[in-house]
Each structure stands twice: as structure tokens, then as C-alpha cells.
Length: 262
Image 1 (cartoon, rainbow, N blue to C red):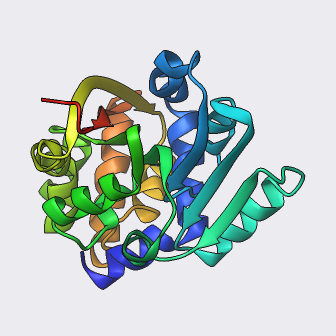
Image 2: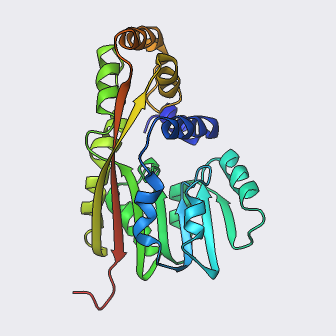
């Protein structure tokens, strides 16, 4: 991952902007899709990696037993301040400000549920080592739920930006096209089972200004091409009422292999 992409990924204001604009231009119930099948389950110890602003942490609380513990981790100190403020009245929630890879290497705790949404690909570890470290934090029969982009994600936007001379960074392309598939393969030796679900979340953008603002907050923004892209969006909306960007999403639930699995 390039330094610029890593910097943007840790920027809390950029993250908040992306979340707000994504939610404002879609009808897909992302959290309903993620957590719908888990509503009847209860866990003792839950870890959320790359917790961000805590929107999905609220849903994790509903999966927690009354005497359980929810640990929220994020590399951004600003995000951790938001998380601490958001859950300050709940002693069962603890916030950890740490780099993802450093935490995975040094954490001595075990969890029965680990959740990460749109963040695991920021690890600098190869998928094999990343899988091993994640599974080492799970209790027997523990579960890991990973949400991330899948093949064809942002295809319409990437194609339009490319036509304006924007080069989509290799790390972004890899995250969208290959990461989840490679993670699935890397998890195979460690997981007792894996359940995969795919979804499409079309977002309808209705103004050039909003679409441009979204791109500016993204991990694939290129300031040197701003004028060309702004003109492209302006011309598009002079002819069309909307610009549809399809988010392709994968949800993978891994269950840790136990000594009784064959």
C-alpha cells in the first residue's frame, strides 16, 4: 500500500465523509445484510478490527452477552477518541488505539467472535500469515466475519476515472479484485468451515459536485487530474440524471477448526 493511501485510510474525516456520502446515495441495508443471520447468536468476547466511527459496533453490542466484552481497535487516534466518547457509558466496551498488524502480533487475548468490515486489506501481512494470526486469536469454534469489496467493485467509477487519465493504484485494484478470494484460500487450512455471501449495492449519484467530493475523499484520489475529472462529471450530468456506482461486496464467515474436525 502506498504511503498516500495508508494516510487517507487512517484519516477519520475522510472516512466519515465516505460513510455519509455512501449512505446518502444507496437504498441497500448493509448492516441488515451483514448481521441479519446473526441476530439469534450471543458471544462472550468480541473483537472488532478497524472499528472506524463505531457505526457497526452498535450492532455488535446486540450480539454480546450481558457479562461479555467488546474490544474496538483502530489505528487512528481520532477515530479512537470518537469511539471512546460514543461508548463511554458502557464499561463492557474497551477501545484500543493500535496498528492492526502490531495488535495481531502482540495480543494475548482470545475471542469467540472477530469482526472486520472494509479494513483487513490494510494489513501489510501476506494473506497466509494474516490468516494464521487471526485464527490464533479465536477460541475453539470461534468465528471470524470479514466484509470487503469483491470483483467488479466500483467498476463504473474506475472506468470513468481511467478515461480521464487517472491511474487507479495497484493496491486499490488488488483490494477490490483479489483480496477476498485470496483470503478465502489462505484461511482454508485454519478454518473448520467458511460461508460466503455476495451482494451488489448500487449507489445513485445525482450531482457532479457530490460525486467529485466522494472521489476527493477516497483512497484513489489524484489531485493532478481533478480538473479533467470535474469536467467529465459536469458533462455527464448535463446529459444524464444520475451516475450509478455499483459496490460489489463479499461476506465471509470463517469458523475455527478444532481438534475434532476432520
